[in-house]
Image 1 (cartoon, rainbow, N blue to C red):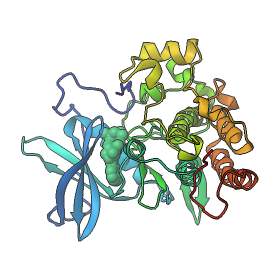
Image 2: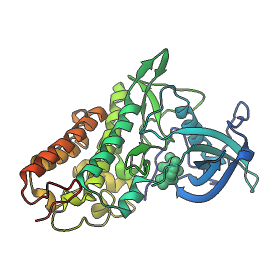
Image 3: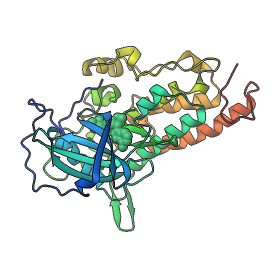
Image 4: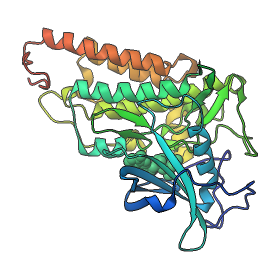
Amino acid sequence: ISVLFCRVCFRKPENSGQPLPYIEPSPVEPDFDMNDLKILELIGQGRYCNVYKGVLNNREVAVKIFAGASRECYNNELDIYGIALLEHDNVLKFIGSGERKAEDGWQEYMLVTELIHCGSLMSYLKEYTYDWHAMCKLAQTAAAGLAHLHLAATKEGEHKPAIVHRDINSRNILVRTDGTCCIGDFGFAMKVCGSSIVRDGNRDNSNITDVGTVRYMAPEVLDGAVNLRDCECALKQVDIYSLGLVLWELATRCKDLYPGTVPPSYKLPFQDEVGLHPSFAEMQVLVCTDRGRPAFPDEWKDNHMALRSLKDTIEECWDHDAEARLTALCVEERIIELMVLWDKHRSLTPTINPTSQNTSVTT
Ligand code: ADP
Ligand code: MG
Ligand code: MG
């Protein structure tokens, strides 16, 4: 489904499966006793990793296992998880890391994080539909997680630089059982400060815009026209474009947006236009040349305030002009307003049962 263009932290090796010739100062001691970690069933697969459910000291955890060839991604994630003040309800929580020799003799690397029971937002969207308020909660918490990453902060002598994610999509956002989201997969995340990238170690950061999932790539990324003079702003705007697509995905599964019928089954953004395996060139034509964006279905034609504001918010995230896009904080605030607007709309609509919190609109 996704194609990766990355010259930053990971080169797809020709001899896939074998470790890259990477010079590491010294082996990293695990943060926990490996004997205390039990690895159970496979719960997710990413581009380079398998994610397993595990148990560490009687606590359920997720264990992301990187093969040797993906070591750069592992190091990058570790680096991000090591940033002070990163912790936030809507950011996946890090527990520990370690490495071991796999059965085939190659070294593999493990990231242990909290287990998020509902898995990825994409798998959640495939399975469930929900009402307006539940949609807003998913959207607001995802935006809050991104806003926290994007924020540079100093507190009690500790400093958190701004972080850009660079691979926001519905697989890298996870859903907790309480219906809130958290952002995970920091394989391509980067610390940024104004026009400079905060670099550590010996990574090749020569091309900072060639990563992500093509389907979710902003037009300026597809066109190679990211404004690197202010890469902090520019890369945040790239994240917001992708967030806009995620908001569209969220809206397509909201029962309240399909009065009198049911939401259609889940589709990826642009699935109608380019199918399941778009090439970089196809996305470039669609998103840059034709300025295509996912369509709003006919059911969303009703222009009551709440729905109009939702559509405006989505459109202001995926605006062709990167500088016109909302900030993550602004998206979060808009979504909080959407909850209020919906209640107003409901109170004015006689067909809605005012006594029930979760009733969808029926006509
Ligand atoms: P990759 O970097 O290879 O894309 P991800 O970190 O995105 O790997 O994880 C791949 C998939 O595994 C996710 O899309 C999700 O379905 C699942 N997953 C990852 N982390 C967790 C977690 N902490 N709890 C539950 N599921 C997870
Ligand atoms: Mg991922
Ligand atoms: Mg990744």
